[in-house]
Length: 553
Image (tube, rainbow, N blue to C red; front, side, top):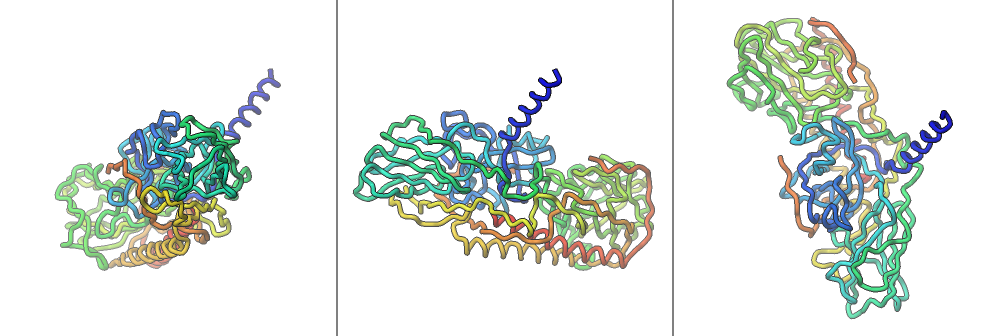
């Protein structure tokens, strides 16, 4: 029996190894939401999800910025959220006029989104993602399009395990294979003026990672055609020491900067009135607006929540500026689900602006949290103003699998001929794609300028958080295992390639154990300034690193 049990375990492990996806890129940051319906036909033209050429129910629509004129059709991505991870196949895109285009967006089907989030209506603003191999069953397949003729051959290529680099066709009377043109989808076209396709014809599909499969066409029959096999994903991962999955990516440092930043809301606050998220009548030095409200009594609280949650290990605490219309002695700051472990300032909040730092070492918290609370414990109504709320970046946290300059990834760069508008029947190669972009020079410029603008914007917004005085708890953490490293990664970048395909989707909208109660902290102005400067530099480098990693796709 023991031998039988060992055999079963061994077979199980082997099966698991063969069915698991292989990481093909580093982990990166994107946005995910569960607003994608099961389309009858997305822009990749796979047809109904449950049809003979359908991709199943675990699929994704990308924004136009990331879709790259169909080059990503059929690619698989592992997307991570607060609940876990899912692997989806790309089947569709959403136009720039409809979907956010400043960073990768994954609109997931309900079946896929429920694997990464418990809230079907949420948006995971800090989703982690990476390209992986697909768990394809059987060989690559093809189907002739119904509008094909002997002068115009269109093939839908599907069930590929990794990305397609090129498709060629060689008719009976041809001296050499001819490259078929991608139609902004998973369909490829051959057409040459005045020439007729003679059968049998040989079709060769090549992988982004080397290797190819072949198939012989004897006619324009619309039966499902099978190639000689499937692509082989790199068995020794091209990403060294790849983690089992990507964690949530790091949230931007700014939570409130002249207004709540994207993904943050105050809807879980309680017993308050007169809230104004952009109050220009009172603000600290360097700001133009503050968040103001009246906290009404001892059960009142301002709670700031992030849609899709955030990972605490990227940060050592939060920092903010605050004042009140009267002396306030009962301020407590805590994570909503861990109220018994809280931070309180060493002296009361006054009518003058002051800067406060709350180290996470003072709070009981989990690796993933959804919100934090500023609570009033006095039986008074108090009008408060708060601004420049920022996370403090951890100087030591590093996430395995995220951008690391020592692990320059060969992320499966592909060269795919893409049709320029219309039917693409001319068969002229119009643009060359390095995995995702239509121009490597444009892409590099885009990635570099994006990284620079993000970093400088972060630094300037953080630096503008000038204050009158400073109170800090003085503690700091050195938690590791969940940050992005500060060195860059090289690779070809993305450009916002246009697509002629139709739009078929629209978007909507662990515990580190600590116990205790109140903790009174002393002032440490110089420590606060040093930590702020370190955080700004770290945040800038983190975002540059992430942007350059994205360029490797």
